[in-house]
Amino acid sequence: MNKYFRILIFVATCLGIGYCSGIATQSGGNDWFPTLKKPVFNPPKEVFMPVWTTLYVFMGVAAGLVWAEIESRREEVASALRFFWIQLALNAAWSFLFFMLKNPLLAFIEMIVLWLMIYETWYKFRRINAVSGWLFVPYLLWVSFALVLNGSLWWLNR
Image (cartoon, rainbow, N blue to C red):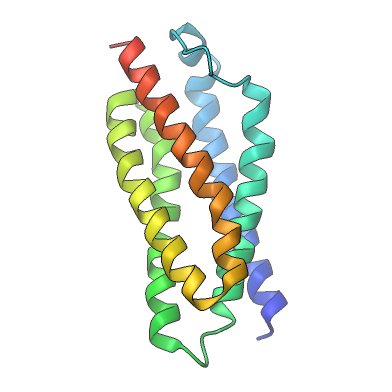
């Protein structure tokens, strides 16, 4: 299987997870979320879809590039991709915890674990493929911002 097909598989998977997260977000995003007190740095809702779409594409390309190295670095790639799948599952779970369960505290705690898994994935990816590492930097930065935002939302609405 060539590198571009591997990238396509991962990009499609990430976008699919993003789509499912978007559905979960809409469940509480239209009725519950507007009622919350928000910090002054809360972005407008129109920002989230293009940012997340871009990040899911970057994640998919990064994972596909790492997967393309499987023949020469089997154990290292397998370990990196395990962390990738863990962080992707945690990424999806956050939307359900925050918007469907309407639980900012639980979502905040989960996001701390998510951030750690993203960091570990970034660390492993960059050792296998430098471009993959760089593609994870915007994701790590955005989730860092989202962590502060989530914590602020919980604090303001406790």
